[in-house]
Image (cartoon, rainbow, N blue to C red; front, side, top):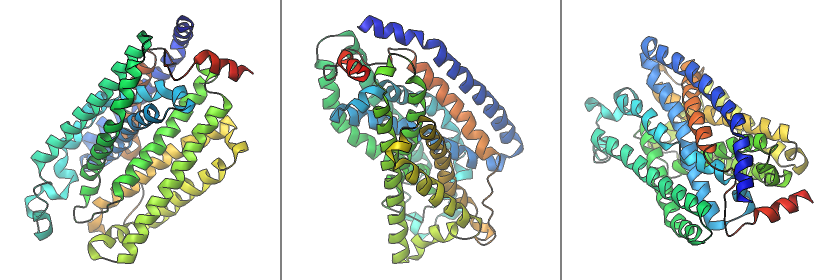
Length: 403
């Protein structure tokens, strides 16, 4: 059976190579535009670069998170998409390199890096918000994430090659504390890269919103790739309509969770009405930003909610893929709504423009091409189905799907 699964996976290599070529083409076009933007629009470059980086790194972080949840909880849904999640975790080296311009552009991005910006409030945060510690934390995050990925993939390979159960047991034992470490580092990373754009403002729920949004983007991308590969063996026997509807259900759940946490943050801050907190929303609920907020309410929540709540509609794969693509786009819009207003305080909130710069599209295209190129490269290296997992019998699942 293992030999047949490997053969079927290798037969899909040309299709996956086609996806890689498309990703590479998009990445080259995006890189050319990004390079031109660096030369011609230097002030805007780092702002757009941060947007693209925080979007794509969230998929790397949360792919690992969902993978560890599967190792802990089991479930056929995770067995069917495990290789897709493992491929996502292996994109951390390219994101490590792509994130270096964020460090190079710290002075353009973060107000607290300027000596004349230190006031009474920031003086109390200088032990954490300083350039040296910021850079150290950046490399520490990636060292931890790389270590987590190394062990998860190493034991997964060991299970593929062995009939013993120790690799699976070791992965389960490792995933519990590993998940806690991952959530903590993801929390601190979101504070560093996003919340510190406005260092006087703080929210205890902000990092949760960012990670939930990253989970929504990860489920959406996984659904798109899964639908494409579900037409061919060996995944056709695993990614049945029922499993694909499960992905739609996860998308629905995290859409609702994102809306709940986002509204909770707004409600708590607005009711408290503290100057150091309310200013963040005051900026984003005036001028063009208000209409962008309405778009997020409509297309990040209501439209996908109404489409995914129905099992019949969710079972139509074209609709599922369309909703997933829309949610990926709205995730970029949401991060734009979070980051861009932080750079427009001097322009007056009533007249601040919410129109995105062309670099806000070029940089995510460039990073997305690089991320997907590595992602599909990792996906084609191994069997698309995990081998010798003692918790799942592929032959029995395939027979059940056939009937």
